[in-house]
Image (cartoon, rainbow, N blue to C red; front, side, top):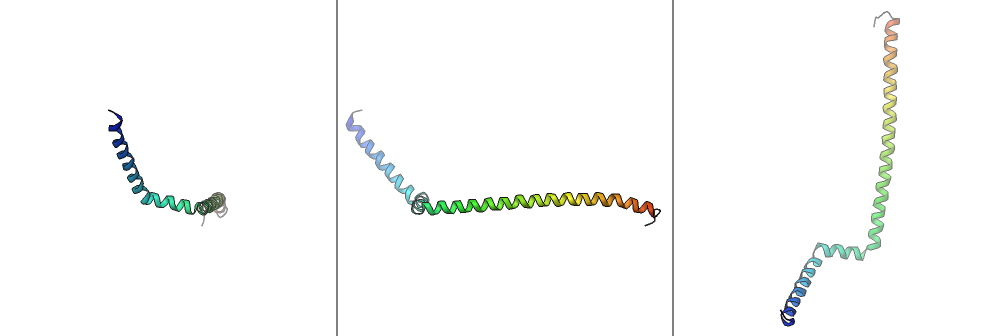
Length: 97
């Protein structure tokens, strides 16, 4: 294989890669890259805002979960107190309800 046989093959490979790159960059990938390049800082701010919003929602959910757990403990306590008082009331009334 001499140098004159390799040159046309290199040219064909370069042309094929160029056509493939043009097709890929004109599609959704290219459009996404263009949007990213046009509004890079704006996209970063939007992403940061969404992240802060999600953190706030997570904090709210954690606070709600803590309140629910506290209410469950109160209900359990109330049920235990009521369960103790009912037999006392029945014993004092002589078992008549």
